[in-house]
Figure 1 (cartoon, rainbow over the protein chains, first blue to last red):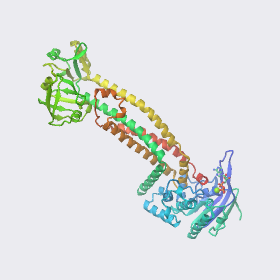
Figure 2: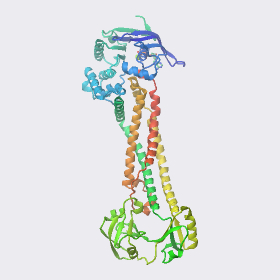
Figure 3: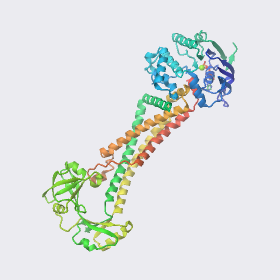
Figure 4: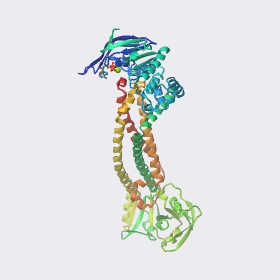
Length: 224
Length: 378
Ligand SMILES: Nc1ncnc2c1ncn2[C@@H]1O[C@H](COP(=O)(O)OP(=O)(O)OP(=O)(O)O)[C@@H](O)[C@H]1O
Ligand SMILES: [Mg+2]
């Protein structure tokens, strides 16, 4: 589904602090699978996720989605693909403070112009599924860490994306909450949703919910 | 089209929610903004209404008024004076006018008693200006008495109240029959207050004035165009003072608006990053910010303008009272007739709303084109 061919990414290219975060990655990610990226801090996991999720473009190499080269597309097209294909759960959750849980969930759908009724119903259903319906009108800064993460997951799913991307989803959670997340992850796997995540956490990468683990070090893949 | 509307509604919803989240800051800004519009609009409405009043007064005024002077003081026109002038080339019509001031101790105001040119007021009746009617509670067929300067009491019946086309011109006016006028003021028969001349060709007014001065060395011609110039300079002077006061406030506002609008807070920057990462286009972010700027500036404009309208036309511009002292002395009390000039409103709108919108957009653009991947590392 997603293919990377000799993908490299440099930060501050051409300047004295030039840094190559990825130095040649070739990888095929299959649809309907849960794929985990594992590696030490600074190995380039987050960077790789931003390339896959159309948040950034590679310095060189190709990224294709369903066979279509997306590495050179202009910003507007990338945004469009990002909105339709990917849902993100960020490490810090990145919810918008001051808004309620349900408003945060609906946010990615605003630019699509979908009817409010339909949107609200879907957001409601997602919160229900994540057992957060009772907190729908609470401001997100009043929610606990686990609740915030579930709001972030619901938000990632509002546009019904093909691929869910999660960066260190359990880093801010205690064991119990992390286990809860794994349960949610498992249900996604059972649904046949494509999930790509990064993690240090053995609880995550060694769980049965993860179909495939990709190891990274110093901006390169490590042969299994 | 439907999707477009839905999308704009969602953007507005989000904008409103964002504005409410920073209530204190945005309300403060709104207040200052509305205040600026209020002051500017008050000045504009006031100046415009005054100009219009002046124009109405002068429109009906004769081209030349001839006053007789005795020892440098305005004196009555004696009988036979009109005939003495004889025919002057270019003068269409010449007639003696009768008018005078009367101080009414009841409401402590000056009225202008005037005999209309056709002397069309029936004996024993009066036609009064709207302000006067209001102050003394008069309407058609009410009776009213005035004590003349000689101490005698005169009773009249009000035949009509003048329409409120121009307060300055007609507010304190009392139209009266000639005989009543002479009796009330003990005006000697055959005497007039001054002489009004109408001139067909405006280019000749000056020549005629020179001729009249030569022919009647004891008289002083007053030209309408000179009065126009006096009024104009009077208004320009007042407006000048107001504008000087205003430029300070405009400057203060400009600094404030620029500071608030162009300096994106770290929070806002982060939010824009999140919105972009979750699928908002740069254009959506800009539209949202445009709505925000638009909502703030339109609300401020409406509040300020409506406030200014009430201030000027309902409450008589009390905040400008010090600057308007000059008028208040001449006309102890008057309300301006509400007039709004579309072009003026448009100008005000342009100079208050447009710069703010521009100030909002500059930094947004900068923030919106930054890479969305920064969100992954906050
Ligand atoms: N914007 C940037 N400018 C410069 N260097 C950057 C930038 N973003 C990332 N890097 C560097 O690229 C390298 C890879 O970063 P990345 O965030 O992908 O690592 P990671 O594997 O996700 O690490 P962690 O497990 O700590 O999240 C790091 O050394 C980091 O310092
Ligand atoms: Mg990382």
